[in-house]
Image 1 (tube, rainbow, N blue to C red):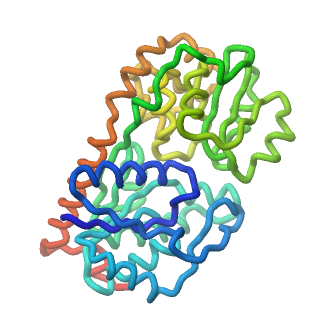
Image 2: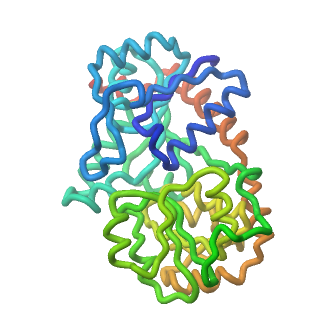
Image 3: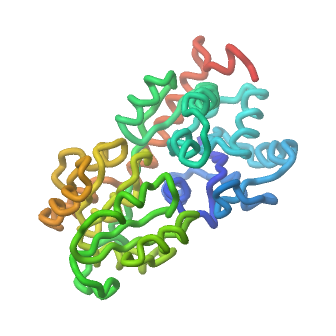
Length: 350
């Protein structure tokens, strides 16, 4: 394979785990001789996503999207998201009899339920049909694989993530956060599904810091006046904020991995989180964080963890290894597509 097309509804100017992951895949796969074309909303007219205007959804005729795919002449197509572009790309692959892979990045049924009274089983049924129509669905962690396997998802493949250990590193200068200590930090989207109230409501010493933007920001700033909201931050300034913190608090119960966990650990910052998919897989019993249903206990206990232990653990996750795993999965999916057993879409088109 020399040409890969990735269809994704999550891309610049969005900042989230999906975008960060494929930014690195473009870079790492390029170094391996793979030409990656991103089929993303930036190439089309967009409208704001309902309930989450920061996310822009592509609006285009299917024929225009299909023409872009044909022009890219990809050897393989990977569909990263289940939005408008992902749906059109999937439909084209099914119609043309092309092998394609997908990846399961977010627990969208739980996210949707947090915003609207839609039963999770309905959304999972739709997602199952979407992903089972491909030759392989990539998942980041063992617990996510077990979870959606029980829900009927098939042809699952493991695809881990990485961290930039040069950017995210400990620093002797911790002036980026000149606040009373200990400093408890959260980095990520400020949205209902991130469960930030669980963190901000804790009775903790020192200071609570939130870095990120999202639809819940105004309400949380009004409700939690003692917390410090830093807004959007990336690159070197973000790495400096991480390194200046004493503990990283991750209250989400719905994330499927959590790249921010690795970024914090690479800066030498221990993690406090719930024992759920994502933290349970990344942290586990490695001794670099504390997972507990009592998030206050986890936060206070994590403060005792040596920072050098966190850094060493994070560096075991590399983006180059992630890219090679991604390519291996594509090879397996293409081999599966050529066997007599066919993916679900070949049994029931549409």
